[in-house]
Amino acid sequence: MSINKGTLDELRIDRNRATRSLPWRGIGITALVLVIGVVVYVFWSNRKKPALVRVATVLETSSNPNSQQTVLNASGYVTARRQATVSSKVTGQIIEVLFEEGQRVEAGQVLARVDSSNIKAGLQLAQAQAQSAKVAIEETQAQLAQSEKDLKRSLVLAEQQINSQSDVERAQLDVATLKARLARQQADVTVADKQVATWDRQLDDTVIRAPFTGIVISKAAQPGEMISPLSAGGAFTRTGICTLVDMASLEIEVDVNENYINRVVPGRRVEAALDAYVDWKIPGKVIAIIPTADRQKATVKVRVGFDQLDPRMLPDMGVRVSFQGADNAVATSKVNVPKAAIRKDDGRDIVFVLKDGRIERRAVTIGAESNGEVPVLSNLVGGDKVIIEGPQDLKDGDPVKEKKT
View 1 (cartoon, rainbow, N blue to C red):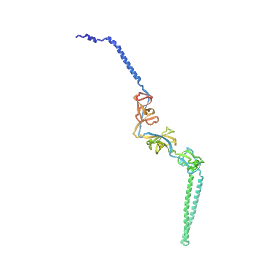
View 2: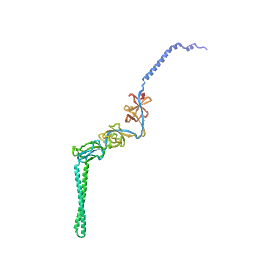
View 3: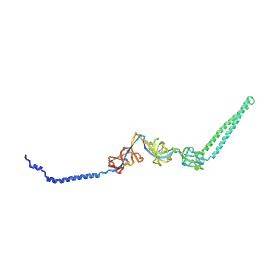
View 4: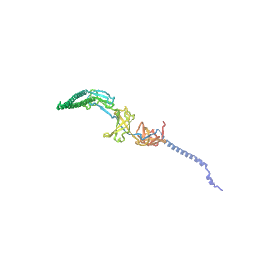
């Protein structure tokens, strides 16, 4: 078989031409590698570096149907349910004052005395009149006894026809007259005894006593001054000697806006804090809601009682009250986060959660802050890591790195 020479020439490799094209091919590959390297470098150099942040792990606490939540805050004052301005029942001059401000007095203790010289004189006269009436009774009783004997003798003599009927009737009249006189004199003795009791009561009224056990918070009179329950002497006459407060009757009065009075019911638990002791939480409960509203202030007065009294509680102290509401749901869970974890975004409360190395923005509903912690009522569960410290320009999806502490 014959082979075409032209065909063989086509299959022959031209080594000179292959050698001439090799440098250009290497240059192209090098250029491609450089382009890819530049692209990779630009991509990695423009990529955002993870920001360092501090996080806090959310702790979950369980709650039950009896757990309490604040439903309303209000302010008011400590008041004494039993407080009185102690005065005298009679008008007279004060001769003795037996107390000082701040002193504790017992019910019935003598606080002051009013001049009783005129009343003592009247009492002595009434006693003498009563004694005279009693002596008159004794005289009449003796006369009556004699008259009854004379009547018996007259009746015997009349039966013997020695005395006439007129003598008998005269004896009967004497007995009846003396009996009537004796009855009147006994009534006079009763009246005299009542007069003595009246003067004795007036004498006792000159001694001013404490109406109940309490603390004297003001002293309004001194010996030598006039006192009268009716202020009969004008501006120079005292109407009271002191103000007495029963510290066992202290409670709180608060004015609640009528728009929120539906959140308050008798018996509801409260937590109070005196303005003088803001860190002292005082438990109590609603005693009563006064069934009327103040037209000018649009408020309703609410009485709150303390569970336990304390010497630090004083009348007219300012106090803040948090009304507690029972959660009617079945046992639930709630979470608390540090206050620093709560951020604002377009007027809404949000938190940033660290998840898989990136930020996840979550809108939340929060409760009232307490001791630097805020209860989160939705959109967080126990175990979530919330960011509490980091750059201010963080946003959803940014890569972050947890700062080790």
